Image 1: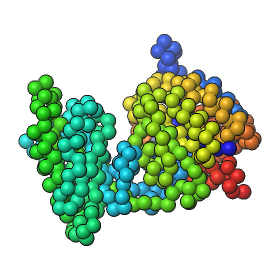
Image 2: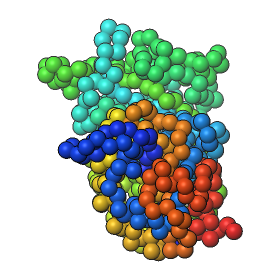
Image 3: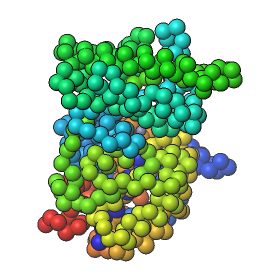
Image 4: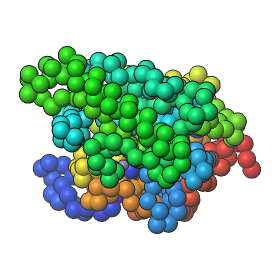
Length: 418
Ligand code: ZN
Ligand code: ZN
C-alpha cells in the first residue's frame, strides 16, 4: 500500500462573480465550487476532509517553502534559496557549497537592460547560446550554465578547493526588476571578503558572457530579423547548496515525484526523492495529465515507493493570470483525465488531495487562506462532506490541519505511527 500526495498548486480560491462557461449565466463561487468535478467529489465523499493551513494563520506561502513544510522540513532552517532548487530541478547535480541562481537571457544596450527576456527567445536558440557560456573557469571558480525553457535557465558557481575561493550567497542578483542594481552588475551584501570576492568574480563572468554572446552568429541572425539579441544574463534568487538528510533517512519514506515544473522537481530532489521525467509533463497549462497519472499508476504498481508526490502547476498559473474560467476548466480537465484512475487507486491506496496555498484569481497572487484537503483510502472512515471545495471542506472532520502535521498524517496512513 502507498500514499499518493496530489498537490494542485494554488488550489484554494475566493468567491468571484464569473461565467463558468462562455455561454452560461454569471454565478458566484470559487473555481473549485463551480467546476463540474464528479470524481473529485466522489473521492471527498468517500474520505475525510478539512482545510490545510501550511504555515499557519496569516502567513502567505511561496511554493518552495510550502512544499518543504509539507515534506517535513522547516523552511526556516532548510530553505536553500530558489536558485539551488531550480538548478536541481533542471537536472544539475550540485555539490556542497555551490552557489546557484535562476537566470534569464536578456537584451543589454549601452549599459542598460532593455528586454528582460530577450524577446522570449526560442528554446532551441537559447540552448545553442548556452553552450557558449557554460563550463567557464575564472580564478579557479567553475561556472556551469544550463538553459531550460525559452529565456530561462540556471547558473551554478563551483568554488573548487582553494580556501580563497570560498563563495557566499550574500550577494544581490543583477535583475533590475528584483534588485536595485545599475548596469546589470551584482553587488556584495555586507562587507565580508567572501561577498566582495563572489560579486567580483560573477561580474567578470557576466562581462565575458556579454562579449561571447555578442559575437555569436545566432545573435547576428536575430539582429537581421529585427529580434532583440540575447546578449546578457540576468541572475536572481541566489542560494548556497548543502546536502540535507533525506526523507528516507528522516522519515523512512521511499518517495518519488511526478511533476513538470523544475522548481517542484528540485524541491523533491533536495529532500532526496526520486524524480521521474514524464513525456509531455511541461509544468504549464498544456501539460499532459494523462501521461502523469499513467506514470503514478505505474510507480504504484512497481511497489517500490511508500509516497508518490504528484504535482500540477497550472491551477496556480491560471490564478496568477486572473483567469477564473481557465482555472475552473482546468480543474474539470483534471477530474476527467486523472479522476477515473484516482478513484480506482483509492480502493487499494490512500490518496491525499490538496494545494500548497491559495491563489485567489482576483488577487492574482498567493494568499494566507487555507486550502481544501481530502484523504481517501480503503480504511478511511468518511465524514459527512460530499463535495470537494473551500466551503464544504471547512466543515470536514479534519478541521484545520497545519502543514507540519502532513508528514505525520502520511506516516500514519502507512501504519508507521500510532
Ligand atoms: Zn504554489
Ligand atoms: Zn504562484
